[in-house]
Image (cartoon, rainbow, N blue to C red):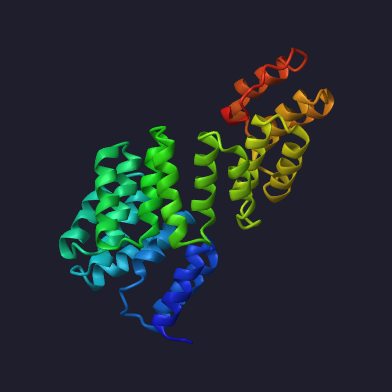
Length: 295
């Protein structure tokens, strides 16, 4: 079990399950067992990026660039390091270097796509994700990336199709399932979206938050409040959740509870004081079906 290959597969499995802490642990064990192994380090660098571990990612980038500059994984690690620092153009330069070394390295195409999205260069992003799929049609991250672009462009049918493709490859991905639920909701398929989100791992509060928004749009306020309470219990310091609860409670005519929720949101995120104070000032005014996603 303690081999680099096995730990790489364990890390990949945890990564696919969006369990990034255990993915990091397995991939770092892979590196300890086989210090000279390069395959898998691109995934470790993405895991560190997602966990926002800038120091660890910087150290990894330094080690791999000192060890082997002709390995495509090296430049994915270095690119991720710059990406985390919001230097997207520099990151793209390194991802392109990785592709030059190995044009069939799927992961470098996908990372390039994400950087183009960060720069809002959607044409090049689409091309990058399609290149990734051309190399490996089972690369679910690229299908998801395309779906996210089409969703942002309000092409909801196309978004739904691409999320479905990604989910057919990795049915355990809570990220893709959440995205699919959003696309179905945007397409007016509210009940189907609720069923899709119900299947998401309960450790992912994002799905419950999305379910709440769908239920609010269907005017099922009691059910929406129950979902938001679950999200609040999982993420008690998330101001947007308390703000959404305040708006739902206002629509339920529970003014005092709504005021408490708004004040909690204000304490947690003073930067949004204009929006929250505006909601508090209008607490006694007739409800106008405000969009809880405006926060």
